[in-house]
Amino acid sequence: MIAVIDYGMGNLHSVEKGFAKVGVKARVTSDPEEVLAADGVVLPGVGAFGDAMFNLRHLGMLEVIRRVVKERLPLLGICLGMQLLFSESEEHGRHVGLHLIPGRVRRFQGEFKIPHMGWNDLTIRRQDHPLVDGIKTRDYVYFVHSYYAEPQDPGVVVADVDYHGRVPAIVAKDNVMGMQFHPEKSSDVGLRLLRNFAAMCLERVGPA
Image (cartoon, rainbow, N blue to C red; front, side):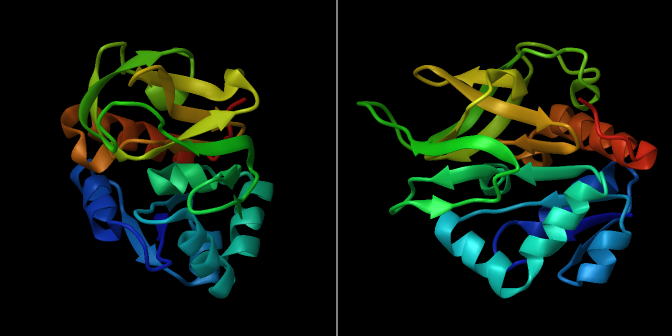
C-alpha cells in the first residue's frame, strides 16, 4: 500500500485514483502509523509553501516524514510536495523546508507567462534511474507552478524542462524523489511514472 499524506493541501484523491489506474492500492491518510506501515509514501501539494509547512508541523508529520526517509521507504513529492523536499523557499518571504534535498525554491522572474502552466516536454538527464524507466526525452507532462527548485547539487536532477531556462522536473536523492509536474494529470507518461514509483516501493530500495 502507498500512503498519500493528507495535510489539507493538494489534489489528494486524484493522486490516489492515478495509482488505482495502474492497479496499485493507495490510501489518503493523516495517520502516522498508517504512513509508516506503508510500502511507499507520497507527499502531494497545491498552494503556498509556508502554509504547507505549517500544516505538516501542526499535524506532527515532520517527524513522520523524517522517519520515512530514515527507514528508507521511497518518498515522492509531487508539485508543491517536491518543493517542500528542499531546504527553503522564497515564496512570500523565507520559509524553511524539509531539507531532504539541499537547495532553494525560487520564483520565476522575467517577461513571460507565470505560472508555467500546461504541457511541456522532458529532457532525461539520468536515464538509468528506475523512476524514469520507459520514459524518454521529449515525453510530455503537465505543469502548474510559479516557483521552481534550484538544487545545490545538479546531480540530483533526473529530468528537466525548458521554460525560459532549464528547470528541474524530476529530482532524486537516495530514497527521496520529486516531480514538479502532476503525473496524475499527465496521461500515459504520468501513469508510467506512478507505476515505476510503485515498483520501487515494492522493492523497498532507495536508489542512489
